[in-house]
Image (cartoon, rainbow, N blue to C red; front, side, top):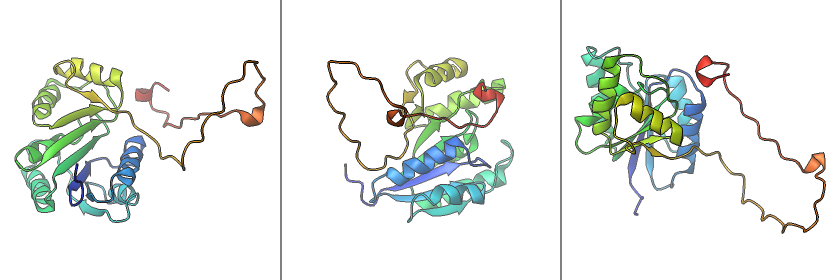
Length: 211
């Protein structure tokens, strides 16, 4: 696929930098250098932090949309999306109801292909949110979750067709090439503490994370 000149806009309405935003920054840093990238969002510090992962990325600040009746902010978001001339709109959803009005605004611009990425799945709080989730999902070119169980749980909760949400796991930057593993010995050898690798996870102490 010819990627040179493709325009991608990454959108977030998060007001803090957490795992979803760091994962988005990692993704943008790893994309083909021929792709032109903008980071659009409602919090200047957040979009600047995400864009810092990509030297040539521009930032676009838009107002927060405070409900379905906030037409002024919704129109401002639509104007910003249209002016950015993006081919792909990547929406990073820190919760299942995040970015929903940006998705609606993008749905009115035929040239945009929207991709929503579900970073954290939790129960949808109201019938209206559930309805908007079902409707907005139909406008997407791709609907992604970062885990298989998360994808199935959200499909069931929102009343979406099974398999309609694809799974693409988050990754972390690699430092150089992985070294080839030596062949296994037929004899079992004890592993010294210096040879062991520890995997550590960091997360906020939040009840939604089960911690």
